[in-house]
Image (cartoon, rainbow over all chains, first blue to last red):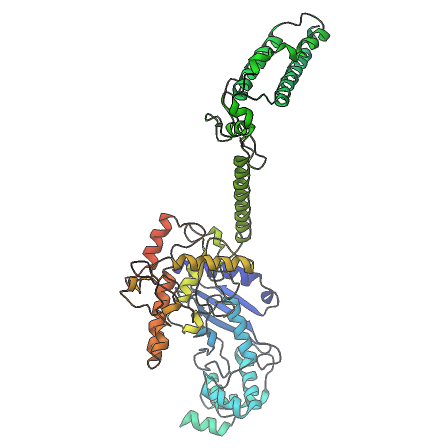
Length: 199
Length: 354
């Protein structure tokens, strides 16, 4: 069985490498071990989204029963998105769960994830805090997502205001990420973030 | 003079044959066909000996003399050929035709109809069929000729069909394992045809997908590519392109199943949950068929969820049991593999379309 999985990944790997998305630097797959069970994926943040310009790394684990079961995928790069856990990188996407189909491939999965970045589903959230912000204050969500992209995915849009707020919290003795999470969770309200961090 | 020798003997040969033809014609005209078989053979023998004579004996004189010699049909004594006819033969020349038609072809020919000993053989030899290029057509039996031509044509059409089927199947890859199906291991080179869409899978992959219990019924009964639901998978040795071919394949498949006894119905001793939607045969031991009514689920609307599970269970089993209907019978190897892989202790069976 493992044989089918490996054989298929081998074929898919060739397909992805040759695909036009790779040529456009939109997706990328790399092998991490020889038996084709662990791979590293990369997707570019789609244009006209807060993720534009960022590069998001994914962990892909291929189960022995692949392709009859979906690959296990999570974000390694930290990301602010209603359907992706800001803590673990776990993804809530139907095709990676109960809507999987055996004809889907690594390529279609990565493209689906890219589509997910363009079109969030806040009513089926993985991260409730992000989803609430998305629904209540879309502008704030976009600003936050953009800032996460610049901090973790190499995005170009650095928000100096956000940076200075993070720096103030870091000066109080927390690390970058803790500061960013606290500020993001409280709509960049530095007082409430401080309260949460030190209470 | 020596250089002329071959041509002279050739001429002799040809003219000799002409003279024979003349004789036959004459016979026909006279309606004197009595014992034509033996005459024919005698003539054959004679012509050979004459030929031999012509070849062996050095040309004594000029070629004009030779010609005058061979051009002499009168030399063949008539009474050796023309024998008295019986009354019955005189009345019905058809009888002779029939007799000729019933003559057996030489039994010593090889598969191409070529006789090992053509020159000496006194049997009747076949004429060449331009389809199979074998000397197989009976020279006098029109019925045999016609029959053979029909068979030949049929075989030819069959071969053509097969070669088209192979050509269109050769490059097809399975949408699940991505392998070229015709290049898979022995016994795995089978297609699983979904009735409601045209996506291509190998039988083992699509069956495995349809058994994936971790997903909802709706998901696994849908095509992995387009998600169109199909109620069953039809095994096939070759890919089918056209609607007509596909309909025929599925029709043949259902027909083949409908001749096999349903393992749930058990010739009347059991109950089939698929009712009259079952593809298999519901018949009593005496052969009389039985209408078992609609499927179980419709009769017990209360416990719907549970029934769906039961149905799914059956469905999964039924998919497993599509063992034998294909354009070609499975090899013993394949059969064994199918048994090992797909048969489970609960019965093989049946099938539903709901």
